[in-house]
Image (cartoon, helix red, strand yellow):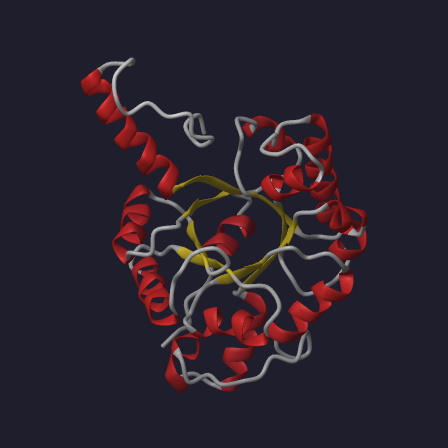
Length: 269
């Protein structure tokens, strides 16, 4: 019996790029659609989505049918919130709103094993094959095949990003253009020069300290973010793509001036 390695880490180590689809809908069948599409991973959300632990485990199990990684964005702040996704056998966690190097160190300490961190050991869940692998193998796998991604989403965090990037023991930084633009008075303007400059600063700090660079959306700037060193790409979200497809069907039937039109902020994404 072998523990499942990370597909994203395998791709990155081979010099390839990784693709992620963000999911707000919690039906595991949506996970299977993402797997059929060929995505490297799905981004599941415990921060903003009303999910539960048992269903999360079903979603993770569905992803593994297609050799997809699962990245769970956690509720910020609690040990159990960080550890339980791993014990459901998620490949990684994404911690939102990191603002200091001390916070980054605390995350690493909670989710990595010695000598990197001080994670409490269990091994009795799927991430340890229900105690069917040795503790030494479990610990090694925790430190080498489980992803930890930290989000930089505020001007306060940006001022500390070099110190955050220098913290050892995690894998990637992801710049949150949506929250950052909101915080600096540029709501929804992800391609504004000030927001782009912040994104570039995060990418440069990550690369300087050996971290991978991830983005939450391309915002029509694929070549730019690739040039900045991004290797982990979130391509879209289920609710946006499904909403756009439904809207198109209705407007195609009624005509452009008919029912189904919307001025939703998401319509053009």
